Image (cartoon, rainbow, N blue to C red; front, side, top):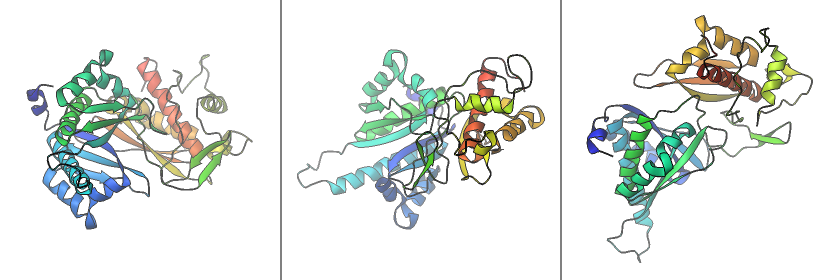
Length: 336
């Protein structure tokens, strides 16, 4: 990628998520948080690390592109030092360790990163010398995939920069459900033999495709029955059915385990979710029984954060209804 293009975008705000092992995160945090504090101060980037006793953690870098690049370089430098210090005496002093770093990106961006016939990803491999592997499947309970970058430190850093430029060029499309590593906990059994782990953040699956239907009416133009809509929702793959089979509202019982799920929705589509004077979002709240909060716009960001809170069933139905609105809008059927 042309160096001038990279330099021209150094002040663009970017959010990058890294997927790291717990031991790697511990080294980045350092004693009493001194290491990560230094990285924040010297890079100028916001560095947030997901909580929880998980084998894997999410490290989020937010800030101008130049700050993101510097923070990432400091993380790679720390990894290199840790690997070098653990190398056996048989290693030559001149050899540089291979570093592997994983990025988490929206699945909707992966095609743009690969390019037609794999041309873009092949070009990045050849120009940086790094190996790139893109996971074929989405990460559990999310719409994101991981990208592994392996090589000597400088190759990994340069590869990271080029991927970031493509991420800026091709922003995610539609709703994005971020991946959240699951801590070790006792599973919550759901009907249909499904197991979900009870965590601070809901891990219920979400139907990634949905039919294009309008919330306000069915095909005959009459008001869409709430029970009929619920039945349509549970027919979608992975929809967690309620424990109680007595009817629709059993799945939305306020006494059920409460969890939260975060979505990111492009600013260009948030209007069709909110509706005129909040009519659509209130309708989704009423139908699903979930609490839905839309965060204020963040300067420099092209997305809005949506937080859904409630039982597993109500969260999944709310996600489904949101996706219906997005599908309707993209097909020219929705109206705000």
